[in-house]
Image 1 (cartoon, rainbow, N blue to C red):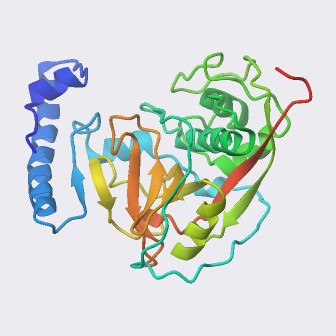
Image 2 (image 1 turned 135 degrees about the horizontal axis):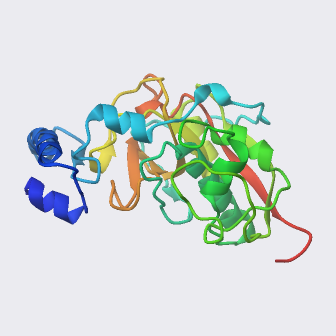
Length: 307
């Protein structure tokens, strides 16, 4: 894989720097990462790595900037949720199992705002509306941020604490209540006609791989992960750490014999058109901690008045 020069990268990604000094600093970060990419990808080509690295909008950021700007899942903000533990399947991780991939709404982009929790919440609402109601509505993350988080917005939250604050309320379309990548005041938009009536956890905390895949047979799931090492993911089956720390909310949309497929909120230019595949394992808390926090989905209905 041939990587672009820094100047070509900056032009391709529309990067603008305030001074020659900043340009030089970003160029140094970029070049150091490219050296790492080349080493890592050589191992991938040799069959010693299961995933490869690629340039994206984050390649001129430091690791600290990436974590600070993008990863703001707040594990402490959980509310009480209905609990149903799906039975574990007796499935060996290396056996051949059927694929399960749900049709979900398009990948979105949270920008430089730690609003992953709102994007996870809306991915769950859109996915459940598509699965259960045959609806393809695109809903507003900004509404979730403005109307459920107080001053949180870009600074942390979690979907399962946001959902109860929206029960029975009008859910607005994204086009009428657009994303601004910052907090704002709660206001109205165009009512989609969709409503949240509840949400259910079908994959338990500290669960197993087989429990996760069993739960995914029934629904795509909002889950939490540790994504500090995801910034340069380009494709393949990611097999990074199995930490139990969590800092990002995403949407698990299916699985195959070797991986769990996850929809992210960093745009389609990241990863596999906005998705990442996490290696299936029962080690630790699962790849990127996906087995640690459990998984859930909202129950969606419609208002009594047709919109």
